Length: 96
Image (tube, rainbow, N blue to C red):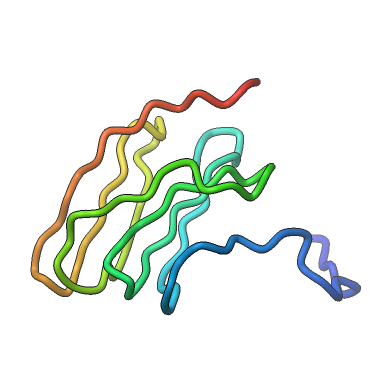
């Protein structure tokens, strides 16, 4: 296994949540999507290549505590401190 010990700065910052970012999930077969959960009551789907927010997932009443992509990246599952889990449909339209 190769260890990269010379990383000094991030290559990209994903900004947009208004409070703490909780768990992060890297997904999509090509590694091109990232989903985040936040205490701002939202989840977000990010384009890993450009760093842009593709979609904000709104609907929870309290902190979103986790977010996961399905294997085909067409669904996102979020869970929240409001004691609900929500499934969100998402169509990947990133260029290959």
